[in-house]
Image (tube, rainbow, N blue to C red; front, side, top):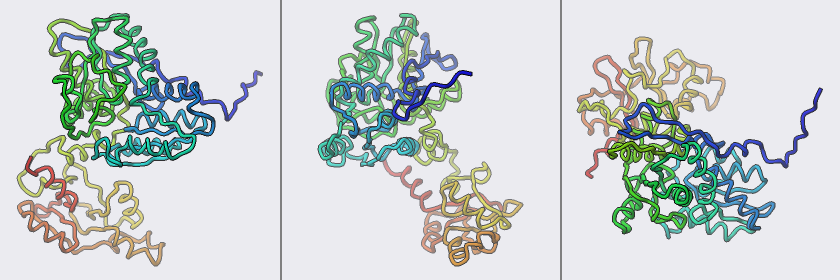
Length: 465
């Protein structure tokens, strides 16, 4: 009988050996024009993104150069994915890790870095460079304040592009059998662009580096016009900038495509539906740009782009139909009445409800699971017979927690505020003024609820452009 080799809590986990060497697959069911289009599955890295490569390279370089010593603190300003890689590697090596993250980032990413042991400082995503709450400025300030801190600074750290020049680029070159005509990239920190550009300049000087940039970012205009425009806003995460990063050698870009949020999300969802590949929001931007490039060609070319990270990080956003509709990225069929304000429609099976004979505990658990503060109470025929909210639950159980086992019908409100679809918004406001939620009924048929949030979302989507 052979014994297993001894383990050590000080030895880095073997998962770090799986960073890089990711698969590359061809797109076969989407319209790529005369071209062959391949995607490199960076979502297969340990934390699910291309940024694992960069994080490992930056920490190892800092260790070699003496900028990060045992017991030190790693600090980074990040859209989430670099933070995930740094949290994994810093934790494995015993460093403290503080991540400064803009507040538009998905909750999945934030929960993931916290689970890896990172300390998170959320900052505003609606301010530009130079503002005291801009995420990179906050990270730099923390670095100056904390003894032994190392600011990874992916935007200016030379180890970032070097990771792609020495790793990602040679991998693509071998996987494509030394036959590749264009690579479509996005720019967040600029490392992928610069590293790949440097590598392919040596082995395939005619290769075209193509930028896919979110609408609102300044980089598309910089490539096309050579001037800096005022930045807008965009919902895609991880790429696009309101400045040109130090690590981004924009002279390497041959052409650029501007892809708006709606197209990015639609393309990413199509990639999942048609090719079975679950990519994140920036994947939609890159693939959208790659498809435009391919369809523009008149002869066959072999093109590579990236599945930058996994779509698991965006299940509450771009893969959530309700979020997509609420944000205006998909349009639901309009009825021209109050039905257009109902976010969760009963006839489509979207309503979370309870029955009058369910327990109060069941109502509470469903509210928590669905992250709502009230539920309609529907009988066996689907008719609304009441509504129960958090206040009803508190009144029922605050003195006797055992009453969680009582029936919903003993705690619910049966004085319903119902409106027909033909009612107007002033009628809706009257319901809200009385502290109620509007129940929309068509005769005896329950259609759904309208909350204050639903009305606000509707008004925002219909505000003048």
